[in-house]
Length: 361
Length: 148
Image 1 (tube, rainbow over the protein chains, first blue to last red):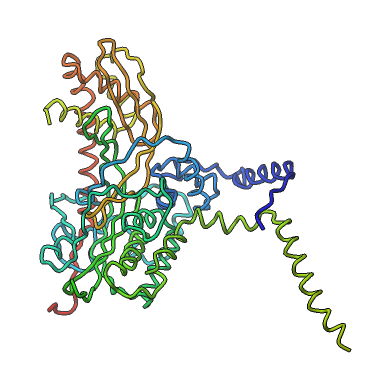
Image 2 (image 1 turned 45 degrees about the vertical axis):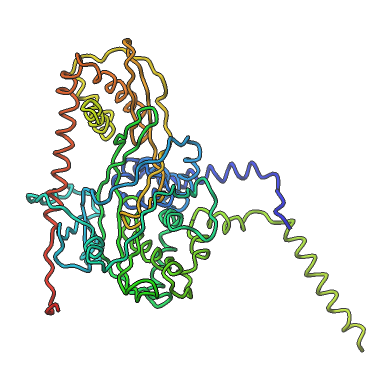
């Protein structure tokens, strides 16, 4: 039975939203949170909302987080809804992550790699002990140390392996990639479509799936070839100008996962790769995306598809938290008519089942 | 690509990566901007960002970003354009007016000196500081076993 609409409840809904606004503000003796404070001091929450809301705009994401009381999926939903009100100017040129102004770059496969290992502002190697000095507002921290920077090129680790023919190259086709904001998902999905889906997918879902591949569900023996985070330039060609211009700069995180591949009838044993690219500083998400991207290549590489992470329909249909939350949470809306019909069916079935017993003695 | 277009791309990029306040502050030392009228916008829309699989493979759509654009014309008919990341309509309009004014050979030297070059220097200094902070976190890992 289809969903049947209900009417009424306007006053209660209005009052509930008024209470929501009051609750959002909290104790008025505590200063109100400024959107700029969210953008500056809760930067990783902002990054996550931009990535999953699939819209790069730090201030809008910060506003969404404030409005959603810190519920990041609700905030991503708000951002997705807002973007539908804006016209589309066009497509930017693919970001050149090789030319990234690097704040962080680490490799787990090469100790000494051209361009070096740069830790950047990371939680790695912290002791995960609560820092109570942050609870007492004090002086701002001392500026981070600086040392003279060498102007070193930082080539991709995957390129080093590809030069030795030990890494399968990603074929670069110049075919216009499908756009999930324009065309619905269909299967089998091409890799560009899968990557777009994963880039806006839920971090928790991808983390769980990525973890499952490590635990043996579609084991892919991964190494982090490289993670890099920093700023890249966005280039766009306005039709009225006819030449490419730079329209801004954004922060992204990229992960190149290097995986074993035993070879197939047509290809020698070599390494393959999984790729993750995420808005902002989202290392966990970029790594998870790379693991899942590699698992989803099983079909192309002639590997058995046995694990959930290798099943593209399962992964891609359930990765979007805005879609998922819409369908899960709609269950709490009034279903009185649907349920009434189910109730009648169950009563009828029970009555029918009880009748033969009556007839028996 | 002609030298004129190269120079124009440079200032358009710098104005886009700057902010309304930073540009406005530089204008105090510049001759007044010529009067302009709006041709289009300023209006905010979206540009779809793209990445490449593996960094160098096939392109894929990554996410949208907000962009504000504006087109203006000066009294002499010169048209200025701006596409600026974000939703700052004032920045987009100012960048479009500057784009038009900078195309005028008589106005260009003063505006380059007062606005564009200082913005470039500011950006270079900011990037150099970030690079020095990154360099301070450069590590040398030592493996505890002999590598084969």
